Image (cartoon, rainbow, N blue to C red; front, side, top):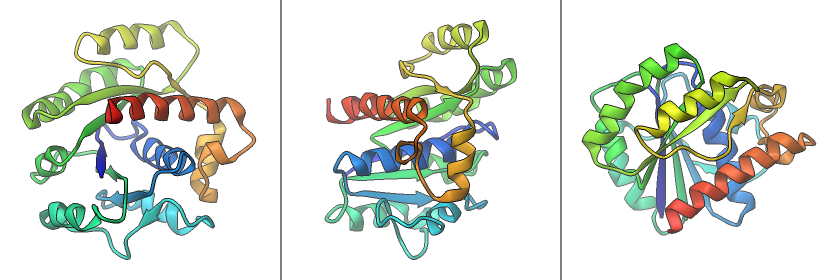
Length: 204
């Protein structure tokens, strides 16, 4: 089982949006996906509880951070992929979650504030010595998006597909869907392409 941790210490970066949409896309691609919500806000679980489809899966209760490794070990036999959503903060246990990852995805909005804030997340990921990639999220069609990609590329790899600012990402948070399950073909194509990129790293 491969494990993806979605991490960004800046609030509003799009962690939960990325987590739920990747989980749906991976499930549609034939992966048995387990989602874990380690964010006390519980947004990923709330989305999942409003979902009609059986996949991706969640446990009856999300694990406490101190039993995360044991939970992942127990899930190995049943799941191909685990996607973990984390809080917009740096609790002491975050290092444990990062250390369990085969890949850390760091969503970043293309704004000066978000680019300045990414340093703390990057330091934590580098300390954990795990592979990571940035994913630009909530992107406008503007020069600042390209500039943000160039800045991030100085620190690590950047997903080649941006996650644009689209209404369907917010709407599916309420309906329990992923955008790849809607009629928004542009959003669906974005997420499918991000999943293909992530899959290439995991399977590489």
